[in-house]
Structures are given as C-alpha cells and as structure tokens.
Length: 258
Image (tube, rainbow, N blue to C red; front, side):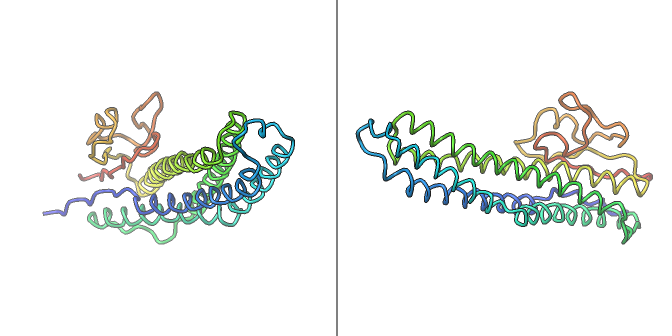
C-alpha cells in the first residue's frame, strides 16, 4: 500500500520568529519614547493647564520628536531590518522545501539540489518585507507623535500620556503579527506553486488549517482540486492558498497517479 502524502505544514515557527523580531524593535522604540518624554515633557507639565501654553513646553516637544526620530531610525537600522526580513524568508523556504521533500519522497521523486530561480524569488520577497518593516517604522513613530501632541492639546497629565504611549505598543504589535502571518502565507503559497510546477505538478488541493479561525469562503474550498493556472476566486481575485489576507491555508500537491 502506498504511503499517504504528508500534509503541507504552515511555517508557524517562521511566523513566531518574525513577529518576535518586529516586536523587539517596537518595544525598543516605546522604551526610548518614554525616556524622551520624561526628559523633555514630563518635567514641564503641572496641574495648572495654563502651563500647556508656555513656549518652553512646545520647544521641548520639538526636541523630543527630533530625538525620537533619530533613535527610531537607529533602532530600525538597515542592517537590522534586512536581517529580520532575510531570516524570515529563508525560514519559510526551509519549511517549504522540507514539506515538498517529504511529499515527493512518497512518490519516489527527489527534489533537485540546485534551484536557479530561488535566489531571485527570495531576494524579491526580502526586498518587499524590508519595505513593509520600514512602513511599520513610520507608523510607530507617527502614532507616538500624534498621541503626544493630541494629549498635550487636551491638557492630559503626564501619567495619561505615558499610558497612551504604552498602549500604542499593542496596536503596533498587532500590526506586526498581521504582517508576519500574511507574508508567511503568501510566500509559502507562491513558493509551493513554483516548486510544484517546475516538477510537472499542475494541480493542487486546497487545505485549510481546520480551526475556528478559518473563514467561511476558505472552508468552502477545503479539499477541492484546482489547476495552478486557474486558481479559485476569493474576495474578487484569483488567489493561491495563503495569498488571501492573513490566510493560513496551504496547497497539497496532486500527483498524476493520485
């Protein structure tokens, strides 16, 4: 009896590592923002709301934002960002290659050692994720700046402003989590399709994660076969498993003699 084809695994370890790397950057920004707030602003705030109108406070506000911008740029340095993006894409690649090695072995197929297309594929997705992380950098800085400005205008206390700065960290972390899952699914889906088709596998079975977070439209596709050159339409566009927003679905190869 032929062995059953192993399931395609989603790169959860890659997601966790990527999210942790991005969260670390966000936490560092928040820590620096609080230090600069205490240095430049907290000492200027008093119970009397009129103190919010003095020129000295707004001068310190400008200094805080200037210093914060420089520190955020240092935290999200080119080296750190490229390392985070590169490590992530390579981790997804390792999961994908392991998936297919195990699946192809059941059919007596050996995955070729040399894959000339892979370097360009990896570099392209690393570049994309560098851009996404830089966008996250801008969002974190702008969110803190807006929070501080708005609370100063409202006459909030030092404690309220510090709490608001800390609270924005959770919003940024949610954004980082979304990015990690979304990119893992998309990269895995495209990489799987590339490897399958280069070995003559033209069809796949849509396979969901099988938990309560699976969307209805994805659950309806579970177990159905599709050609790679004619994937299903989800939310108005043709997508491979993993390509829809924050999708954790994967493709199972359909071998000719299945």
